[in-house]
Image (cartoon, rainbow, N blue to C red; front, top):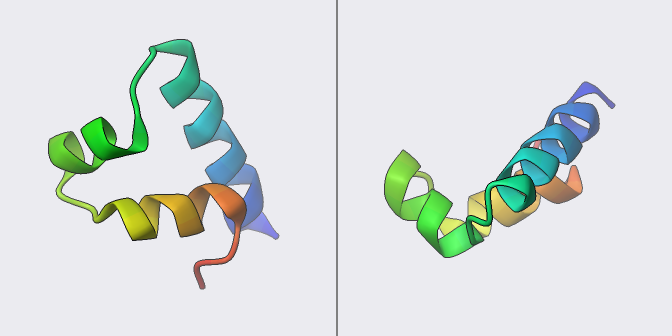
Length: 44
């Protein structure tokens, strides 16, 4: 459940800053697939 809260917060901040998942992936070194999973709370 905590992952979902964190993921929602990451998504909110990313969208507020106008950053795509692809750009966040490039900046963070985390794959776009994993960013999607984290934001949706499906990454364990």
